[in-house]
Length: 115
Image (cartoon, rainbow, N blue to C red):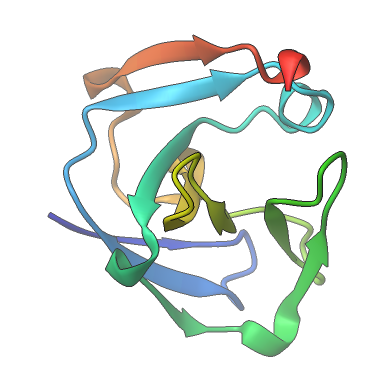
């Protein structure tokens, strides 16, 4: 399926393709404060439609994930990085998707504090 997402003000928008069967809730210091629910897609299935100049990047810990925030409204719609095998991926904040029913996916808890 094709999904579309955006930040709150709409200056950053993207599309991503894939089947979303579960969401991930991470307890790391950033995710626990932000409250997002994540789904990981191969980077080639992710397309930034607009707003590249509106994004600011935040990294922490091992600096392996580039957390992308809209510098106008502060929403993190996605992050970019690599999976454990080195494949490029996009971590999608499912709460930023348009017309997506979060009740239809199970939530798996990830111990991000351990990383």
